[in-house]
Length: 209
Image 1: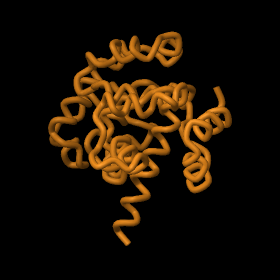
Image 2 (image 1 turned 120 degrees about the horizontal axis):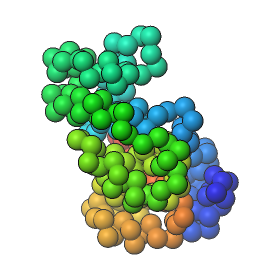
Image 3 (image 1 turned 180 degrees about the vertical axis):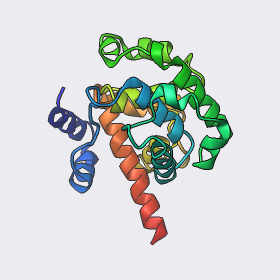
């Protein structure tokens, strides 16, 4: 499935996607399967939980900077960091515990090649036993690391707010309403969700002016 086909499908489903694509360009969901490990993707997901992208990126940069000889913290070195050392670079105490558990379990985390042969739900069930990894975290991995094109992250507040504004709703939609509204987007709900994030961000930028 190509992004060109996804854009064409979404425009047919709702003509307003043409304006979104024109404003924000091609969707930036990229398959990092060959360059970003599942371990690193889960680490990023933990760091980005319940934080703005800017704040999480700052903390991620500081944490990664503790390991200048590596592109990201190796699991066998990250597990040796104390909670206080992680707190010093901005990682919360709770997330420090999650990262330590992730690092300890890294040797048994499946490789991307193994996950590619599994369904979305099978991958979610396989990874959520890791401490601090919930459905949302795995959905981000499905979208941004494995390149799955039909994921609808119903627990993501940015997607909720984007859909609220896109459909001119009074309140943020709940799970069942989101699924119903997004049904015409199949099999490209990941791509549509990316544009819902852009809708949410655009409004936030306008409110700051």
